[in-house]
Amino acid sequence: MSEVRILIFAKAPAPGQVKTRLIPALGAAGAARLARRLLHHTLEQALAARLGPVELCASPAVTHPDWADLAPPLAIQKGAWAASGLETSDQGQGDLGARLARAARRHLDAGRRVLLIGADCPALSAQRLCKAAAALDGHEAAIYPARDGGYVLLGLRAFDLSLFTDLPWSTAAVADLTLARLRALHWRVWVGEELADIDEPADLGYLPACLGGRRAEVSADGSVEGGKEPSQPRGNVHTQAAGNRRPDGCEMEPFALDLAGHAPQQQVIRCILCGDSPPY
Image 1 (cartoon, helix red, strand yellow):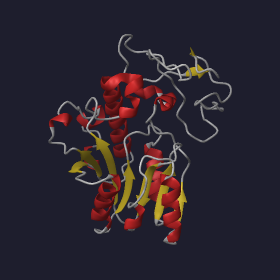
Image 2 (tube, rainbow, N blue to C red):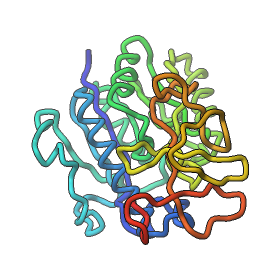
Image 3 (cartoon, one colour):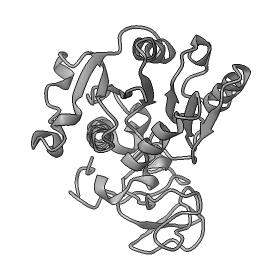
Image 4 (tube, one colour):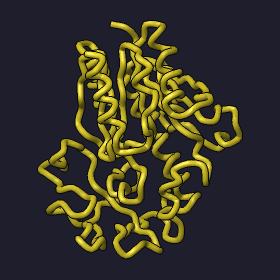
């Protein structure tokens, strides 16, 4: 079996430059802190999968000052997964499709398989990365769709430029269009369960405890009662099933943060770590 390379596409977690759709809820500094935590979590899971080298495809390049204060994950500092390898590269110019295509082709042309992921899906665990990699043994492509209509992982063992060109990135049409193009290529495609990424204020309900979240009950009017086990789907939070598993198969629990200045219909979020400033 050919080598599998996990490529993590991430922006430097600089205030005002990352997670901008979360700024109304968390503020620029809070959104950047959350981006930093999500990236640490993604790196840890990618290395823990032990599939092979992990490459951080950075924007801008890691030599830029915006990356200067990003401490590596604790496990990397301790060298626990040093043998797995962590490499970096510059995403370069162009839209997201051009940057994804350039990185994917570089490795696919060298005979490697690739898993293309971002750094905003806490449910994309090492186990799920391994499942996608294993699926490439019998499929040309593997995909985990996102709840918002995009995808959180695209695995490939062959390259075709149509998968990356003329797509409306950051819209609800991306996953369906990508799947349609894969079918047009007559490729075998493995489709995993739908997962939640963290892009909008409503998505904060999917933050797990390890990232500072806190379980909360979200009522129909958007208010939150902390510490209760959700008993039925309400708003953007899903029912917990036995064993802390949601009906959609995601093992992450719904959590919420509390922020001031929410709109009348916006989910209320409770700060549980530091009071005056958000925990992210």
